[in-house]
Length: 502
Image (tube, rainbow, N blue to C red):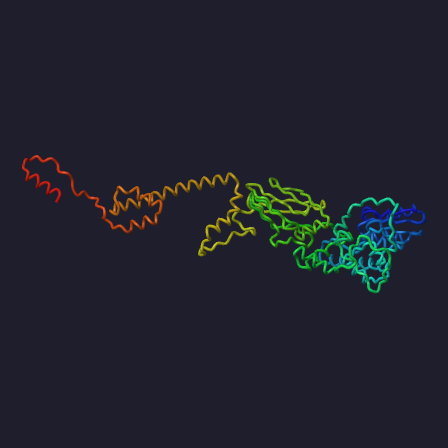
């Protein structure tokens, strides 16, 4: 039997023109269409559906592994007998795109997407017998089906084992499938089955652990609880990524904070902003890592970083400012280190390659005493000074970021200041002691002892000196030994001695 292979991404690896060429070679004979694809471009998928519908021979579609997005409506809409392998999966969802422009452009894009959704819901409902509204709800929830669930929903007509058929070659995960809400059926909630829809009976489903499970809203609540966010935030984050691509503009929508500031020799980590999902920190999510310290263990990826990873985005550093160092990890977090001597107020420009598209990142150098928002810290002269411990704790990180030459200069200045202060204190102590000697409070012989006490405990020494009255110690001469007397008159000599000592 002739075969048409739909292996790979629709619109890139698989095209309508390629399918038409394969059908021409079949020359009207029966054809087996084998599918293993994560989907792709919606318009190219519609063209493939119409090409298969117009084929004059009998068609059998075999879903070998995955028929997601565009591949799922190709299988459902080509008018063929559809067979699924027991371990195959099918996924349906609304059309998806990326768009830039003004409000008129965005309004037109919304209309384009809704038109695609209506066409795809009609294809699924025609195949299964359900209503288009039911299928829009399933598409809105991004519904994954096991082979058995797809059979129950009417998407496939039979489940058949490949048996002797050669195994299907492994296919790379497509770039559009990388942006889906769920990685596979095991990660997705069970698909809803309409109450009025006939449920087909066949063998038990393979790989399905439980038949009954919580609904999609409960899944969202659990997911939000794991992330530590509100359920509505988690729901918006999940509903932002779909599979179908309607090419309108670019494929990358990643930016970085525009007001990042850094101190020379400092290291910072900057998280990306993916789509409309900013990082969790309101200040731009810039983590400062003081020089010589290891970065803290991450507490968990932010919503933006999780979306970047789940969307299959790749990151690489492009341009790096001269003298600076910068590197980026798989989640788009850029680690930047400023060089010593970087000029305050200057900007360092970088580029990050996101899926090979250049995204700008700019970092501005700020002064040591400047707040991150660019304002000098406000001071109130009347306010009580902060305790020494608080001041030391506040400024300790800054001392670690002074370059070695400047640090040596500051240490030399400090040593000189300490020596000058010591000389000043000693001179003051000697002056006070000398004044006490002159006032007759203390004797000259005790001068050095009082100087030592003044240096040891100046307040106590001053208090003790103030309690000694002036003139307690006589400084004027009150007597001296008698010189030899030239007279032999004892009385005269004695009178002289009395006169001297009176």
